[in-house]
Image 1 (tube, rainbow, N blue to C red):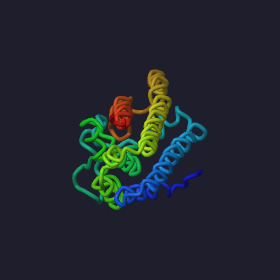
Image 2: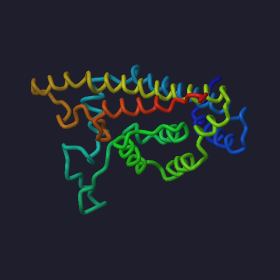
Image 3: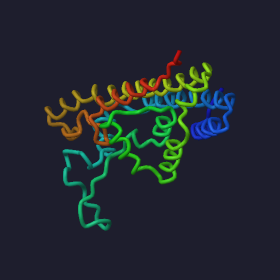
Image 4: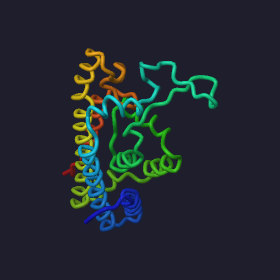
Amino acid sequence: MHCDTECHPQALVQAVNAVLLPSPDSLLQALQRLRISIQDITRALGQMHDYVDPDTFYSVIRIFFSGWKDNPAMPAGLLYEGVSKEPLNYSGASAAQSSVLHAFDEFLGVRHSKESADFLHRMRDYMPPSHRAFIEEIHSAPSLRDHILSSGNSQLLTAHNQCVEALAALRSYHLAMVTKYLITAAPKAKGRRTSHLPGPPQALEERGTGGTAVVRFLKSVRDKTLEAILHQSG
């Protein structure tokens, strides 16, 4: 079974409707589609290894992804001529701005630490309004977790947990990529600065382009994802 790029919201909408009806068969099918979608995202992310060199990403590309908010390199922000007379602070590009990851978290009942949740919610300001509205709809829908636990349906519980495990695996894979493209690439960039060759600003090292202390943040969101695993009572 293969899911195309439209599968994520379709599976989520189908699942929410199945909880409202309720329809265990439809919910099971939706959860299975959702798991495959998450696994497809992980496989797609792996293509970065084929097309992007770690040194080039760290020393060149990443600089242009980085923003000014919470960035010690430019604490006052950046002046956008013709837009504002005062410097503006914006975060850089971040995986935390991905609407679909927020929707997965809301639907599967993932609850992050306060520090991580504060950053994630701030990243919603960078999403299209319709995407934010979709995430809020998922958040306000009946709890999938409560529905499955009260149903006593072991198939639904297993399917839910497989989705959670797939999401945690995606985040583990992302963490491994950050290690390759950031942590491992950093010593080479430091060496270039020592040899008077160009490298990225020192303030960007070991920080995500969105402004986070990236490894600690990614480990936290991965670990909190695994805490959403359900256990049947009794």
